[in-house]
Image (cartoon, rainbow, N blue to C red):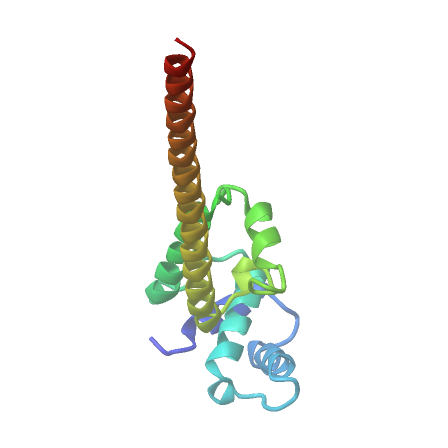
Length: 166
């Protein structure tokens, strides 16, 4: 099985009036922005973009050998869930991920490198969120302790005042 067999299978599944070779050359040329017509000369990112585009057009699943991508996607989805995003709703996922500060494009179009970057970013966001929650809870605890201390001082003052009055 060649490195590009899934691409050729999806091109064949498109059922274009062009020959498979002509269609492949046209697609590769558009993905590489006119740089090449050869699959071998595409970068990994360009290959992934081509695969994603063809998968959408043919409604096919990602290739079986791409388990690392699946793991990365799953890890990012888990982190999104931890952040509070409903991962059952793709519109919610895409709305969050498409934000320029997060990834700037739909979740399905993220490359392996972008998924790794998003994973690091989400871990940092979650760490900051936990740190903020910890500070907030510490503040509430200190505030409560201070309030108890003030109540104690007021109680002692009132007791001493009652003693002086008697």
